[in-house]
Length: 394
Image: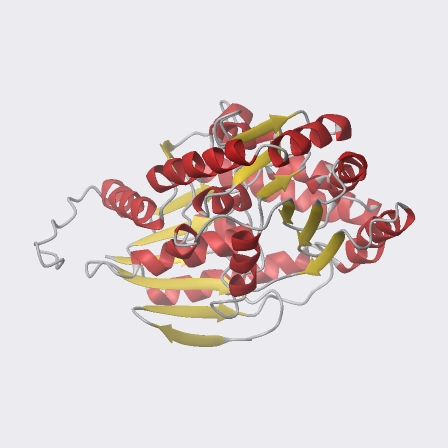
């Protein structure tokens, strides 16, 4: 079976920029081990790091497609045409689309069976954007892409119950419940981390509520002065880097927290793994999330998680078992939860162990890849080959 994976993919294996890139990288790394699958990745080179290029990577082929450089939404229209051409020349049996955007538009316009994995609730995310022009014009096109994808997709993977809660009645096709994959490397991290060290990983954008986190940390620092916070990530666009991230750093300076709060910038996978290994717990302060990869990575690493009850996060973290869940936009509640979890080492370690156990059962890439392959065969009405004892297929 020839499968085209259509979605954002890292320009280099170790340089994962965001959650969807991580999903595509982790999933394809495991799908390519099945000898009955021929795997091709078609991805837009959004950062102009590769250009039009075809790369052989182990048992799969990666097709980097340069996006069209046109004004406003015309850029997306041009990119859709390029994606269509690239996918069509591959003549796949099935197209697996990651995100309801240009990739979905391209797949829907072709005559191949296709499967859509929904990442994020894009119409809600647009409402949290800053900047009138982006929110009004680009936001309109993003919402349109999402509506069209939901209308045309006959097969949809839902990565969180929050997806179905939100799109109730709009998912017209067959829905498959399947959570995102996490790479083996996270499960192999040793414990424990450094005492009283908190890690935030993600884009420094308003939707992530980083300003709330810093307010909470300022309160925590007065009660637990040995606590430290490390923020791994950068702004989502040049404008956001210049404004929101600048405001965050200014707040840290004004509060006298510069020696206790570290802005790490965007990290490659190796550096991010080290941050997970060294932290006591992960904190996520988002206003809106669907199924945050950083929470799943932390759980796989055996780290307790303090997260807001924002969208799909509540379906990942079991309160008082694998972490703590607090209301969004509430710095006082977040500070209290952080103090609780950092003040009880036994509880912290127990939560981390339970988190890793849950993650192995739910998120391990082997588990997710096997289920994904089964879905492929189900869509095509075929029976998957059974593995021999030596691991080959027949």
